[in-house]
Length: 285
Image 1: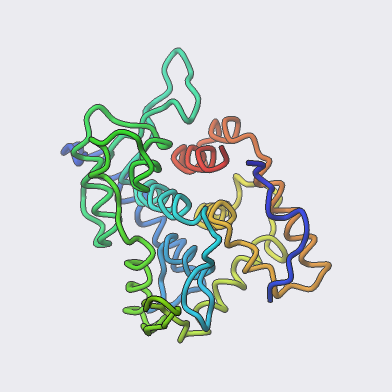
Image 2: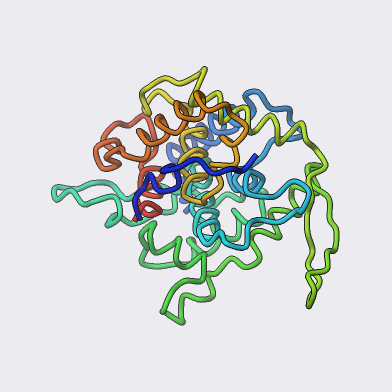
């Protein structure tokens, strides 16, 4: 799939190993990640990347994602891997004499210290129990349940969207309702906190408009991840729909620049974790 697909035409839609150095690096990574996530957000509405992507994809009144969206499942699993990378729990194996591509390098457990988020800790537990390590591409497939290997089916994270929605209900962003769809009833999660979603949309818009830096290495890591992962999940359009035509054109052109990056080359710069670039590359395939 073309990385820029979805922007062709505007749619009319309003192993904790006891090593003190590794432990210190993990703490620093997590502290930096939390500081970035708190920027502009109150502690009451601090969201993970998974929650932000799901929130962008949910219909406000209906409380569910588009039935036609077949990308959000793998996109949310990518969010989980990126979140673990940002919090210093995983990293890509080191590059040796024979430099291998991002997608060929294994995802290594850096620390198994629990985070306190059920989905993240469940994924972390699976990685701790897996030997030898697997690639980012493989983990996205395993966590999604999209694998032909029956021995790996136990790694599937089930009901991810529903579990994330319940997290957002607990944070006061969504509520829970039952809706009848002719032949069946479905639990939905309509929006109750317009402020939180409005702030999220404005944050995404500002990142590619008023706060655009024209250099991915200088971008806030979480925001860079959110933009690319939201696009991979086919929900980024929802953040741009309210823009006027001129701003919409500018925003989509700048996002295309990010999507057209050579992730292998970008990973040579140490400013941003290799895990992010590997996830971007895996979802762009």
